[in-house]
Length: 123
Image (cartoon, rainbow, N blue to C red):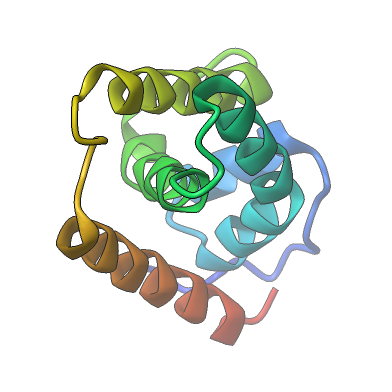
């Protein structure tokens, strides 16, 4: 992961996603801060499962971190929403929910590491 750029943090989701694609962890933290509540609400509404919504939301943001360098979405907000809806549908289609506690702990640890790196980065 390369260090965060010295640019000031933007509130434009598209700009943040471009910076995340460049592996700017500080921009990822800001994107997460701006969008996590909205994604959590969306996932809860899509699944009707408020207990699973935080785990699904964590998976959404980890997917954003990994896919951002490989994708050039036209509308960043729509791209994030599409990932959240797809993850919600996967959860609904899997009889026992879409993952267990071991998988969620792994996702939570990996997301926490990315967020911690971003929080420690200047920018």
